[in-house]
Length: 180
Image (spheres, rainbow, N blue to C red):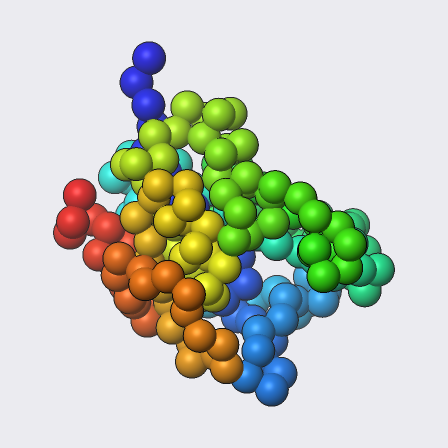
C-alpha cells in the first residue's frame, strides 16, 4: 500500500488570522471572528493538486479550560471545511498539563500527527508541519516531519529550529513545491 504525503497545518495563525493580545496569539471566539488569511485558498489548492493530503492539527485548550464551547470550535471547523479542501481536522481540547490535563495529543507532542498518519496512511517522513508557534515546530520535529515556521513576531521564542521560515501559507506552499 502506497503511503500518502501530507501537509499538517496549524489553524490559528496559519489558516486564519489570530487575535493578538500583548504579543501572544489567541483563537477566534466565534464563527464571525474566523477570518481566512489571504492566499490560504490558493496555497491549499496548489498543495492538493500536487498530491498532498491537508490535515489541520490544532490545540484548543480553551474548551478544556471552560472558556470556549466545543460547539463553537466545531462550527468554526465546519466553516473552514466549506471553504478549504481539508482532508481531516485533528483537535486537542485538553486544558494542558499546567491545568492538570496531561495528554499525548496536545502539541508539542506529536499525537495528532500520529493519529492522522494512522488513519490516512501518511508517511510522516515525506510530510511537512506548518505552524506559527514553537509548539507546532517541536511537534513536527517529534513526528519526523519537515517543518515550516510562519513568523508573526510573537513574544515567545522557538525551542527547535524549523527547516524553513515563511511569511504566509502561500509562501510555505511555494517552498514545499520547490523542494519536493
